[in-house]
Image (cartoon, rainbow, N blue to C red; front, top):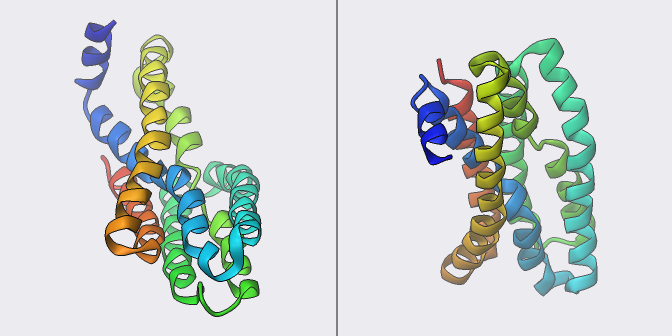
Length: 188
């Protein structure tokens, strides 16, 4: 099985696309905990949990809408503005986190709405790039690697929050998402 993975990863651009797509997905694994750590001191666990949940719920809706936008407008035209908006909203959330619950809750909602649907895009492109049979190999590798997002993401948030504070964790989430999308959409 590892030989099949190596073979697929040797295809031009595949390793870069896979890696940058995973970096672009890191906010999925980071933002929930980062929002909780950021808002809990000022609003408590319950309200911070609602804000985090709102971000996840709006991301679920946005991914459907933005994935359809990719079909109509293209990958670069959709993913890059979404990832840029996500990074801007993450920075804004870090800035307003102590200025009241309503602004923070609103920013959590729009943060989710700006989640770039990089998972849908990457999974949709593998068959055209590799063919159906070889795409199946990459789907297996991608599914395994996707699990790293939900291991590395929260662990990274805990480390960053412990070293630099929860504001740095949410900002890092936005910046990593943007860097991953930039690397993904600029691949040949």
